[in-house]
Length: 358
Image (cartoon, rainbow, N blue to C red; front, side):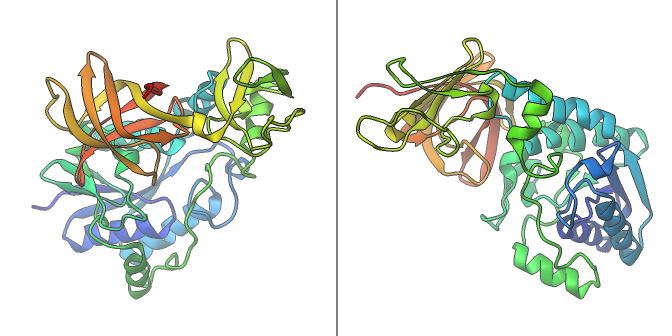
């Protein structure tokens, strides 16, 4: 069946090959590049695959090579509100957000998809490494590039209008294919940094928007062992850049255990104190029938992070998880994505963690 497909083209190799595959499959494909900054020079520069003027030109050249129409859509205001401001407010609240996940949720599969459907398109095509099998979201075959984690916030209704042509291919093979297709972005470097932080300095970016707010760094006993200029600049599990004035009695490194915006304090302690085996998450999005009781599954707690066996139990608008083995450095604000094998069951936002006494 021929579909009208809107291909989201970032200017990178993945989205270019995804658009080419959709067109080659016989679909009626139109390329669109999302302008996400009212001032592109204020976002990251260089060939990194997102948010720059160079990227929009790369996307246009790729569309020309494929032979599909191409447009630029201005989503800068929506991106700033739903991704950038959310990023800042989450850090201010002592949580650690994932802006790529939020961009998928609010921009690619809400703002962009809504506009596409209103214009008569049947689906949005992206270069994510994930698979859709009869509406079921599964991991991509390239585990090093799998992006099912950041797509798990999408609803079943959104996934019904999604297309991920790269999920059955490795990244190395995609680059070879791009070269064969004559796409100039074949060797373009991948993007790894937060796209809207031009120099990669998250602490400086947040300080410009939240100002300085000096406070105490405490040990587990509540003793002051250092000072900070803003609790928002820290994340659970952080070791470097703590600038502690008093070493640990045993001389071992200390890590951020907790961030309290209410008291403007950061608590540090030994590495093993980061271990948790109980997690509470909120605002679940289910991609499978909602379970009626506890069930065995696996959970992934960060993008490309380790996977843990667990027992999950829905509890109204929360999901409680008991891990079979402790996870280390789990931060509130991140997503907990549930799997059975390679199938995504759903996701929720981590709100609380605990360690159950042995």
